[in-house]
Image (tube, rainbow, N blue to C red; front, side, top):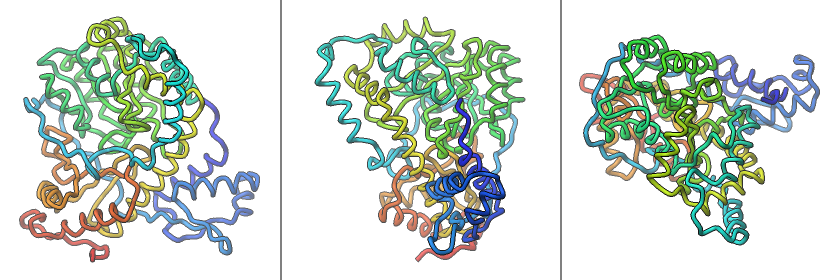
Amino acid sequence: MAKQAKYKVLAGQFIGAIEAGEYQNGQSLPSLRQLSALNQVSMTTAMACYRHLESLGFITADPKRGFFVSLEYNPAGDIKHAQFTAKVSPLPATPPSRLRSGLATAQLDPALIDTQTLRASLARTMRSNQLLFNYGDPLGEISLRQALSNHMKTQGFILNAQDLIITQGALDAVKTALELTTKEGDVVAVPSPCYSGLLDILSVMGRYVMEIPSNLDGIDLVQLERAMAGQQIAACLLSANFQNPTGHCLSIQQKQALADMARHYQTPVIEDDVYRELSHDSTPPLPVKHFDKDGWILWCSSISKTLAPGFRLGWCAPGRFYDRYSDLVRVRSLGCNRPLQLALADYIGRGHYTRYLKKLNRTLALQCNQYIQTLTSLLGASIQLNRPKGGLVLWLEMPDINTKQLQAQLKNEHIYILCGDAFSTTDLYQSHVRLNFGQCLSAEVESQLIRFAQVIEHPLCQKPGEKYAKTGTKPA
């Protein structure tokens, strides 16, 4: 992986200090000359550092006065992960209906998608390829697999084109991986809380789950290893980067240890990695697959969260399961949409995807900060929330609120949120809510957040015997 630029290293130190509360909102930062002298960097590097922080929404520049912190520190701090003893749990035979709109769905605002350049790639593909409408390789167009391989190499993640199989989105890739590695009635280990879409897949497939507690480093590897060693689970299914719904990542040490555990206990690990490239500092973390030496990690991803959900294109690197995975894909379909694959290969191959991601992540970092500042100004210290470094979601905890009633009240007004109980078989997250910050903070979205804060005040949304008291400004 290329060495990180000096200005980004310096900016990262400021971000850590701001998030730790060492700088207060509105506090002035060292001048460019002071920053240059203190860190023994050039004035150009010092300026690049501050411009980078400004693009991420952490600071603002006043031409006459200097640079100032613009990110309000959240005194409540990050949410503490629930700790418990993992056990096997059934899932409902029929998954509940989920709200798929607005603040409830982790997705990009259409205004953020690079539609013009994507259309150009589509048009170029339609003009230039005479074999466009014939059957293609059922495992995916080699041009797309090669483009993806080259793209990931620039991030320090080495994966050969021949290791990849193109699928109809990441969930299709995950479902095929589960079909290969587990059978009906098997137990699959998942992190707690876990993305509701993965729980729904396991539900319709008749699998049981063992929820493993999350922690500051990622996941409780002691309990997970105990389950692997005791052959209590057939596979593990998780997201290691900017996990939905909490937004946190497994540490590098955990990723290495997890890959070693999978090899040692010969337990397949299915890695759903759709948020990895939505790193707000534009430096994608490595997946668990990067540390896989013996093929026990089945790595799944897609462009659904990063670029174009309507393309329904994803991929899997199934490791040692490649032949069986290939057979299942071949007999089940004749491959994915060929024109879209070729257009995506064109888009990635011309460098558009890399440039787009850099711009997108700057925007998402700013939006994330805007949502956090709006919520904390409306609700004060009465909520706790995680400040993610990537992805699309905010995870809120409101101990005194009946979130199911809150969700129902808002739904009546066509405002949609997703409650914490959608992400677990336990009752540990009934005070939690997940919000999508992928939508641009328009006047309409801001009014929804204001209404969100107002409805919380409704007596029906209060837990019995508990008084909701907040220190922030009461919503108008």
